[in-house]
Image (cartoon, rainbow, N blue to C red):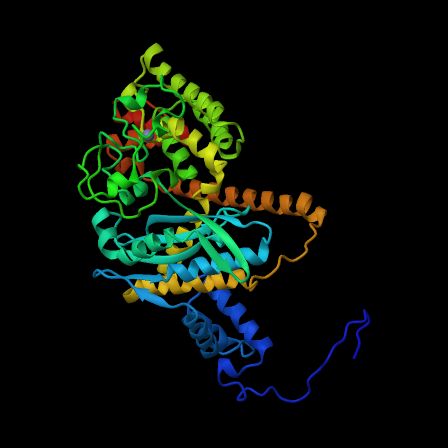
Length: 499
Ligand SMILES: [Zn+2]
């Protein structure tokens, strides 16, 4: 048949054969695709299998829930999960194969770019009151849009708190694999040879932990150089001073077992990557610095906001960025010296600020704008994993089920199971008039109801039974502060209010 608009319509007259489809694998491709989309939606919005089962009970036309579970199992087979040691739930996927996947995708989409920067990121996130996940992921920084969480490929989830000992014990296979990958600079994907450079991006706490350093409050807290607490506020140094071999940290020294554990080095670094390939993530850098400012309650925050965008996108040379950052820090300190305000003194210069002035210019010069290292996608990823954990996970095997669910989502994103946006035209009349009117009517009605209820409330209060201080409180809640003490006067005042 053909419709009026010329669209072909076919009508199947025979009964729907339900018994025919007994297993997901024996379904026709077209139906399989639909089931996959459903599974993706359930994962995306954290709908449990049980909830979906109830839907199918109400509505006969929905695919049966066992088909979805079978589909899910098929998808799960595509990822090979390895368990992590230590008596905490932990799961990972082979890093080598994950990088291969990432590069394959890159080779298809961006055939012309053969120099690739791969970012390895780790972050801890609280998923419930008592449990904490450490999530590891990789992403491709050489393409635009690597900021989005869809580009984050999660490859390991461990349920433990963020400490050096925990990471060393539970994540050993992760670091072993990463260290062996580091030496592989060339990857052969199909006929192409891709040159890969590796980076680690995380917040400063995580970087310090990966390097085996003491925390941010230590004397030598900077992960990139051996500056001490006092030296941090010294702004007379040239812009690349702290990247000199004499004062910069050196990973070979730190990895050497005989190296004297000084300058804040407490443990062996977990990853043998040169220190200047650890990059602070721009999001945390800005958050930490504006934190200090907020605490001091100044209006500079606005200016700072402008600055953060500046560091993100700028293509200025290292020296120019350095001059601007230095000027900002000088202003910051001036508030302390000129106006003798607390919180702007030399000891308030945090490792983050030192990093902004003396290390960010270096990174921007060598690796391009800091935006590439943004942790925004990562944070979003954390949120998603948290959601999965809270709403959809098997709590007994939390890490594995969260990782598998996350992988199914990634599969959905890369295989276009997501619904395209529907073309939509705003009917302007509704937006400008109807919506506004209906909202204001709703608001008015609500306020009316509230005030009516309020009057009832007032009249039902029996003032004669109230104690003096209660009368005063009542007056105060009505905006009247009084020094009256006599009960009679208080009562008459209240009565005059109600009239
Ligand atoms: Zn430093």
